[in-house]
Image (cartoon, one colour):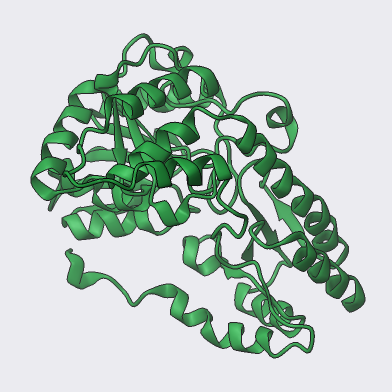
Length: 369
């Protein structure tokens, strides 16, 4: 496998449904892509402006202030209080790291990259680009010999699956038994909604209650795109095993993979301010509180979705049929076919649309019943 084996970009297949939905007399309600629509908080925008005299090359490793802010954030928000600056590294968004991690780890032909069965497709893309083999498996007991990198996604995109401390500990134990790197994609960890996650913090794979006292072989990936509306800044980070982080740093220096200096300054400010994150979560909550019951009244079942940025919905029929039904109401979703072989009867609906548009979608769903 190689980059030449990649299929056409899947979202191109949604274009006819977008056109169909856009023809609705009251306009399109786009719930397909999880791209933030809310303003970047002023405190972060000021920080970016303050740092625009960026005449020198930025530091691949991150500025001292940024690295310390990442360490402090993990302690304050994720319950991971034993990191040092040697354990953290900024990245140019999280998709870049997800796609390149197999390559940066030196994986290739004969190596296996495990990812969830219902999954963001970039895990498999990263394996293919490196020449490795992607394998979908959720149960650690089913993770195969030969696995060199294992991705878990908690909370999951698109289904909101969230791993408990006990489940994470079992995953760590199995990965170490296989000699594999275990990477936790945790980009939606601030967005807990139902069950335990309505009141408890969502745990990290780096939580000391999970690691057994050592971070060896473990990575946590995080993005500020959703919690801080920084998708356009390409602002993310990786933390964990200092040996792996050091290897990634060395490779990234050679490749010139460094976030711009103004973005690094803005990231440090964003990671140090919890108020804007709480405010953004309430915006997502308000949209979810409107959209979820509207879908259920219209005959959809919501599966999982106890955390994260999406509602994972099914009518019990092929996702393309549901896409058509929604498009006729002027609503654009994402087809489950993009997220794995077991997902073809689901659609993904994002909470990243203004409340007024979500309310419009709710009214259209109600009128269709």
